[in-house]
Length: 243
Image (cartoon, rainbow, N blue to C red; front, side, top):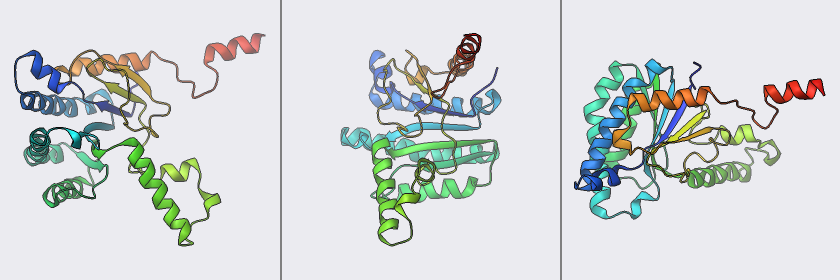
């Protein structure tokens, strides 16, 4: 089975998982962190080189302040408790998203995680934090527009490739597979540019229940698909040749 090099996951359903069990939402987020740990541990053995997870969207700030505070606390806890293991296992941490306006302690923690693991090669864990696909595209457009205004860049030199190279995901290949849990059937502003040709798998399970087996099943689903990228599939080519 050929595994995608880059898998991206929308980790959805923590709150509903908790509600179904009569637990507070924080319990669902804590269970979701454990599911993330297990997924990161499983990824290299399944042939995945890049794993991107949607940890906190730019829209999540609209949630109740208490829940936002809980999520910030869990992020700090995850990095402080798990960073040593991630580093020991050769995991490189990359953060994408808008860092402007983040609390200094959060920003420092993210930067330290990136700096410590920068040379690791077993797996690149990309954490989308304070991230929104539209926001990323707008920030990138502004950055390139400023370069043009300063005379450092010719507007005619801006191509799809150069634009992609200025995104938060610079140096990271586009995801071949995007997985979303909880049964929702949308991207929710996640990797809008990068997922242009990604295969999509939507799972009914809530994120805290996501397991290695769910990931392996999604990879098998991916392997069974024919990726055309706007061209003809092998069967179509054969029919055309005969015709």
